[in-house]
Length: 276
Image 1 (cartoon, rainbow, N blue to C red):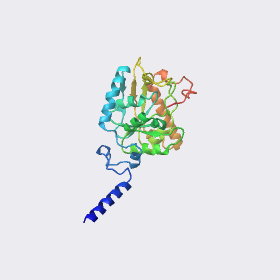
Image 2: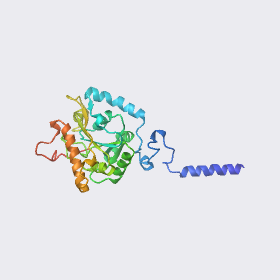
Image 3: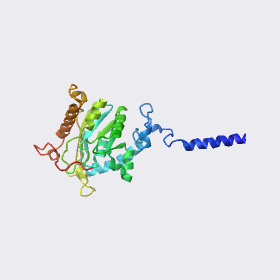
Image 4: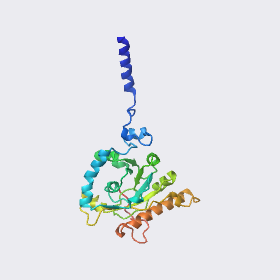
């Protein structure tokens, strides 16, 4: 009997050692949409579930005084955000943009962020906690695209910055087509978002610095644009380009003139591409 018990304990230890690290039972907080948990994403630190409510409360408690006291923060147009999955497509002035958008929402949103940000020890961990996942600039990142589609399929919001990074001058830069591709492939609307004042609140060049904003930090959500509004008889590439331009124009309409390219300049900010 003792020998059998010893053998059983030895076998159990061996099984425990050989089990992969990703096999523990999922946290109930992460059981969304019928307990679907993406094992691959969790292994890499990018869970499908929204962050724990305590993290959200802590983030609001920390950031709300900054935005409200230094930026006199104001958000509008939240009623334009539809129920279910949607893509929030915003201009990108500063690293303060994602929390500025999140503060206006009653729902969680996931983010696509440039991959180099996740290499920063503290910032990378915070990005993971609050629902960001990496996308590699300069090429079609299939893994990032898959992760985005997975979150949309579960009814989540996804925030993207179609300029591809923060603009050096603050002037609106031409949008890339990834958000439109996602919208058409997954039949979800795009909500244009216009952010102002964050380029002053958190300056990025020549160095990072928090400053008082003379006017306001504002976040404005426009009316959703649905892929079905683009002529379905057109080739896919042309439909993608038209939808991208519609979103760009909608964001531009909500921005003050100082954030817009000079008349006749279709490139937005020549020589000053998005930086981060």
